Amino acid sequence: MSAPRVAVIGTGRVGLPLALAFIEAGAEVIGVDIDPRVRRIINEERRMPFHEPGFEDAAASGKLRIVERVADAGDVDVFVITVGTPLLHHIETDLSAVTRVIAELSPSLRAGHCVIMRSTTAPRTTRYVRTLLERHSGLGVGTDLALACCPERIVEGKAHEELRSLPQVIGTEDPLSRDAAARLFGLLGVELLHCDYITAELVKLANNVSRYAFFATANVLAMIALDYDAEPHEVLRLGNYRYPRPIGARPGLTAGTCLRKDFGMLSEAYWSSDILIDSWRINESMPKFLVDAAKRRWGPLAGERALVLGYSFKRDTDDVRDSLSAKLLRYLQRECPARLAVHDPWVSASRLEPLHELRFETDLLEALDASSVAFIATNHTVYEEQREAILARVAAGSLRVVDLWNCLGTGHTLIAKDGLR
Image (cartoon, rainbow, N blue to C red; front, side, top):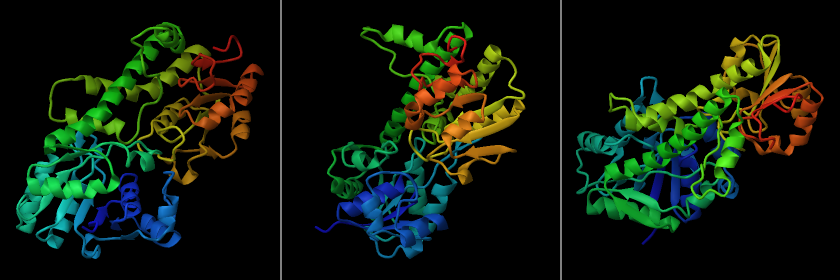
């Protein structure tokens, strides 16, 4: 049996790696994306529009073409929906992109088509999609159409490996859909785990929100330690030393477009407080806490030359979505520093949130020399590699550093010449 012809709707950080993985597995794939920049980079420049190693050859092959509308996708067998599902300001999932795609997709549907929900969604969203599909197309799911929830669980930077190694959860509620989804993801050679819609939706959310709460525990322990003028890294080091039940996470700015929003998909239906909301509050408060901690230790930041090291939300990636570095910069701006700058080797100046008089530095050493206080917001490898250069400036008394990640390996969070604190 020949491989199915696939249209991937939404070719961002979830959809594009999947599309290219299917191409590498022998499938015929077309992408659909409303972003002209993505279409130009893939169709004309034949390169990856973001950092995701392993897919360079597939992108350069020209086998993937991206069109603007679903109607332009042509004759395909499977539609995979990977559009964004952000969280609105009121702890509510934004399903506008999903609703728009279903409305656009429905006129193109015929008996035998399969629709895969790949976007991260709140429980019962796939049932909502089923209702929309049947209403708009006049076709029945399970009799005419196949519908499955097949969540993405890869980590950025390892998509090429994990798309071919992680078991694939497949949520369906009828044999037709189960077989169609299994045929598609069987191309990747991974183990297939079958369940119903809601279970599949909850699996993805459980994976993400548990990590979010896990990191919140380390962050609140760090806050408590610093409030008592103790070193959180030393607390964690001693607490974990030869102890069989260690504290696995370490403190840091915990964000990103998945971890930071997915708690809301579980919390939006409940009026009472819960541990997920508390985790959100803890992680979101860390930027202001670090600014306040620096002020308590070193005095007002007004007139200081402040530098934020790292703007992407995660180590060694160019993804700035929902990064807490932007929030840290805003809090620093409120302190009226004489100079405010940011450095990130993975990010271009055009990706920064507009902020009055914010400088973007491309040379790390020059940025350090122009600064009196630095906050390591993202634990990029380059900052660990430049540990000696950064600490030399601390030892000379020209720089103080806030290092929640312990990138510099000192075991201290607030680092200055007098005792490295």
